[in-house]
Structures are given as C-alpha cells and as structure tokens.
Amino acid sequence: MTLQREPEWHRLYVGALSETDPAKLVGRVATAEKAILLRVEELCTSSDGAVEWQALEEAITGMSALKREILKYAIGNKAEPRPTVVTPRACVN
Image (cartoon, rainbow, N blue to C red; front, side, top):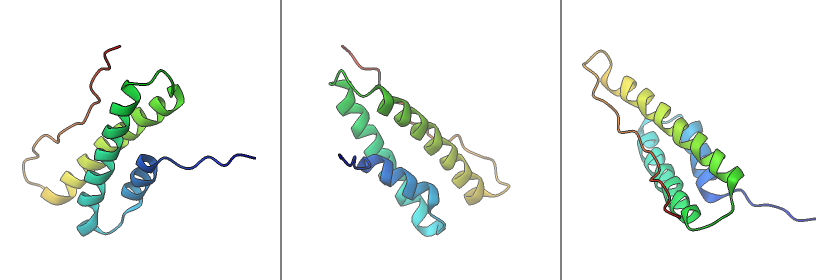
C-alpha cells in the first residue's frame, strides 16, 4: 500500500482558506500563492500532472476569491482597488 503525501502547496492553500485570524490571513495567502506558483513552474517542465494541474487552477481561483474577500473586509465601504489576480504563465513546450 502506497500512501500519497499531500503536496505542500495544497497544505498551504487549505491552511489559508481555513485561517480565521485576520492578522495571519494575508501572510498565509501570500505563502500559499508562492507555493502554488512554484509548483506551476515545476509542472511546466514536466509532461505529467494533469490532475494536479486542475487542482492548481482551482487553487489559483480560490486564492483570487479569498483575496477579494480580504480587500472587502479591509476597506469596508471605501472605494475598492482592483486586487491582483495571479495567473500562471503559459508553459512553453
């Protein structure tokens, strides 16, 4: 029986999504985004990982939604600046 470890990027992503302390949330989101983008870069040089690609795309979408919510919370009724949306670079094969 082979146990598959949860990828580090996924662990950080889930940690950011489940963080309830506003003081820690921004840092956890930033850390998760970095890990997600590093994994995207790694997969760009690999021919496998189709399932993981889908999960990464979903995580990037989730991080964008979470960042929008952070901005809404942080600025209240003030004019909302546009959040930075992180998208993976296209892989060159």
